[in-house]
Image (cartoon, rainbow, N blue to C red; front, side, top):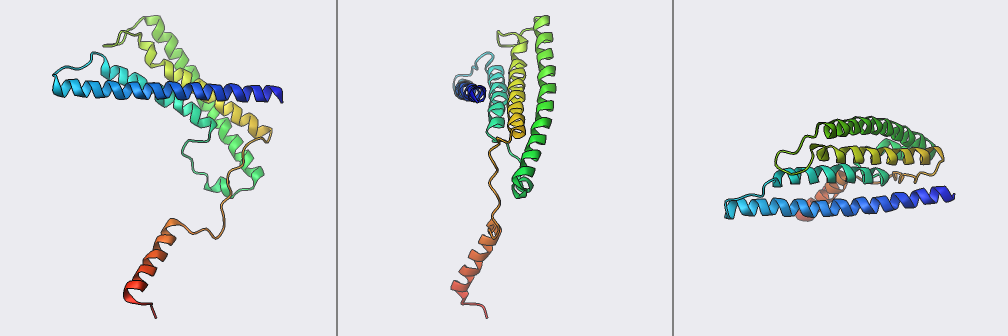
Length: 196
C-alpha cells in the first residue's frame, strides 16, 4: 500500500507541475501572439521567431495536457455502453482500452525519442528561433511517455480492481430533446389552450 500511495503522490505532483507548465505556456502564447498582432498592425513590425515560438508552446500545451487528462479520464470518449455495463465488465473494458492506449503511446514515445535523437545528431537549428530543431519534437516525446505511464497506471488499477466506477445511467431519465418537446407542448397549451 505504501508504494501505491507514493506512486499516486508522484503522479499528483507531476500533474501539478504539468498544469503549471501548461498555464505558463498558455500565457506566453497569448502574449507572443498579442504582441505580434499589435506590432504588425500598429507599428509595422513583428517579433522575430514569434510564430515559431507560439507553435512550439502550443505543442508543449497539447502533449503535456493530454497526458494529464488521461489520468483524470478527461478525454472525450463514448462511454454510454460502458456506463450501462456491470462494474466487472466496465473494469475489463477500461483495462482493454488502457492496454491499447499504452501500446499506442509506447510506439509514439519510441518513435518520437528516436526522432529527437536523430534531430539532435544533425545539429539542425530552428529557422527563426535560436533553438535546436529537436526542441519541437521533445514535447511530443515527453508527452507520449507521460501518457504511456498514465495508461500503465490505469491498466494496473483495472487489474487490481481499483478503478473509480463510472456513473451508472439512470433509467427513466429524460433526454434534452424530450424535455424541449414537453416544454414546447406546455407553451402551446398555454398560448392556444389545451389539446382535445
